[in-house]
Image 1 (cartoon, rainbow, N blue to C red):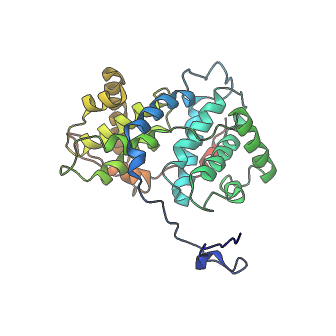
Image 2 (cartoon, rainbow, N blue to C red; image 1 turned 135 degrees about the vertical axis):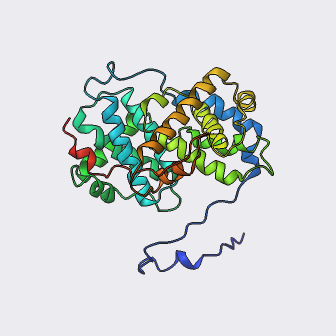
Image 3 (cartoon, rainbow, N blue to C red; image 1 turned 45 degrees about the vertical axis):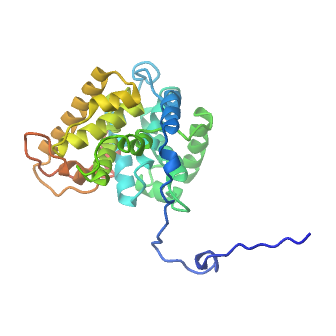
Length: 308
């Protein structure tokens, strides 16, 4: 029997030792309509409960870490993701790892940033295409060398063990295309813009612990509704309620909290030029007020400057 390999090697795959350009384009997979079927949405709705944080771990599991410390580290993690141009899914997944770990294992206040760094490393390995995962050495640099590479590697294994190696978690980002494709938006609005604004709201909400107690589908639904309302359209909460079977009052409460969060951010940014996620938030127009610019996110060193 003759074995013939008809595989074609792309030009970029050869010359491993040759110096490569600093920035390389990574092709994303083409959209697959099979992934938008109803059974996929149903599977995600069933699976999301496994990765949900259902109880307040502050004061119970965590005796030193406070919600304020978590927010500082979360803002630093978001800054790193924005600075490196990570995929939108990386930050919410890293926050999911952070909350799942904190809900099971107590840490000291001096280890919170190390934990966040390990979660970023794991999330980028899972969600970044090709070889674009955040290098461990670069993450150490972002901490101003307050941690060592050995510390990061050991905590990566610790996080994996505490999560039982179940790292393919469900986040609110996973629900966005499934929900948007089932809303009557054709001809009314640019769905890509709605998708982008909803992604921004999800990332901004991930910084606040109060949004952690909402399910991923709830946060996705309300982020879509907030994006639509910001564009002067109906939020389609009844339709989102039908799709997700989430209590309508719960959706309304979460939607109001998201709009209040974004409005507060816009009002705070009286000076400075917005960038990254903050720019997207500034593009949202909360009725009936007019949007303003939002200040830059905290720098990576801000976490170290806070004396716990």
